Length: 89
View 1 (spheres, rainbow, N blue to C red):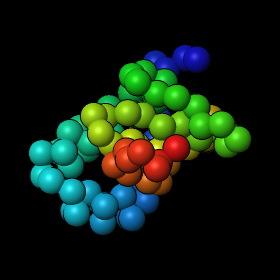
View 2 (cartoon, rainbow, N blue to C red):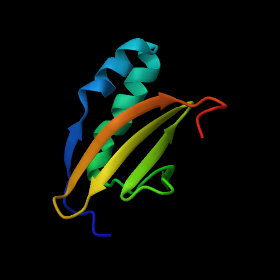
View 3 (tube, rainbow, N blue to C red):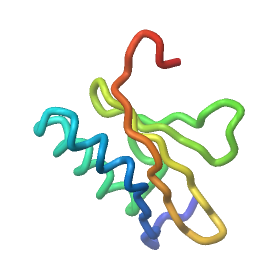
View 4 (cartoon, one colour):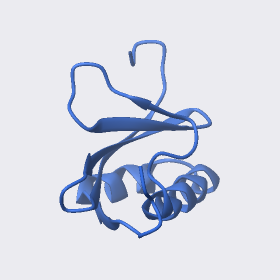
């Protein structure tokens, strides 16, 4: 995939609500990764979600960032951030 052009980044408002509830250090680390996503959404510890079309997750420590890649529009939609638990998957 050619990632020389940046992607547009859209973040669901619920993501910001979640980030306010977690420790500041973790929230800052997650935001730093989210800011890097438009440069190359296929970089890092990512995995395509089974049964979902164009839905990916990126691992950041104990947290997961879930996002959709809309290739035709060159848009990334970050729609959920969750702490990984034993019941998550």
